[in-house]
Image 1 (tube, rainbow, N blue to C red):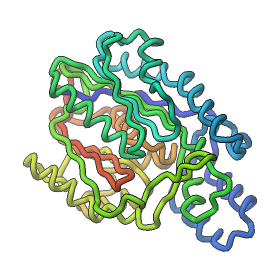
Image 2 (image 1 turned 120 degrees about the vertical axis):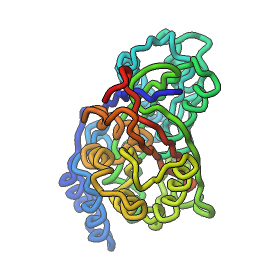
Image 3 (image 1 turned 45 degrees about the horizontal axis):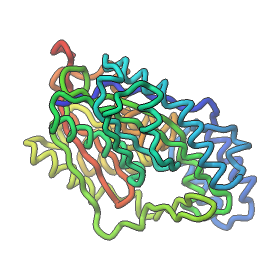
Length: 353
């Protein structure tokens, strides 16, 4: 069975704190009638620091969508290869061992995808399959894991490389001053993650079952309004409450596998915000401590979109992993409203913790 190995994660060097974010909101939107509400919502995210690809002074400018997209491409090419190399090294594979690259991102656009550039630059084989996913937003991290699992199930000897590259700061729109937009300005950060799914061997999460679920009639709750100025992020105020309908989907997937979603050994969950984790704890009847990896990502990096799930998993590895054969659940949530879910056992190469 396919094993999801240790992710490699990198965040940019420029840091903005919550205090700086609040000060900027007060300075730039002093006359906003709902400023106190926006400030309270930002504080409630629990995001202490975020990392961004440019100094904040440059981030707050808007040179136009063309220039921003050029910066996305340049930063991706400069930063992604080293993250991939660490993931390959951690999984003990070479570029020539990779059969498919699954690249997820919702914060910039390239055609051909970065996958083509990577194949040329990093000596991946010219027969390497390419699966770029651009429109699943934060759910794409979970989707990438699931598509890698599917691929390795179809081709049991194959290895898949997952890459998530998100520069959310390049989507900042200074003219968007709705409460949802102001909240987003204090929630999202930039980050890159990569991980290998090995068809044979490896230490990590042995993937066993995956599934998707879409909440009906919620397609407009998380979306981009694409304009000449770029991607304008729209966030409905009902989004934080979506764990109530999504928790049953997680329970059903686990039940189909003969597991109880309320009684697993580890949880790697997309941290879109603190209420997502609080509500999931409530509806799954799981102790809040179970989501400590996801909450740490939110606190230290903010919501880094599709990279969150991989960073939370990386933190579990850093803690020493879990016992051999421990059972766990991973899930990413995003536009649709969509959940991408997977189940697996912890697998050690030597059969130990």
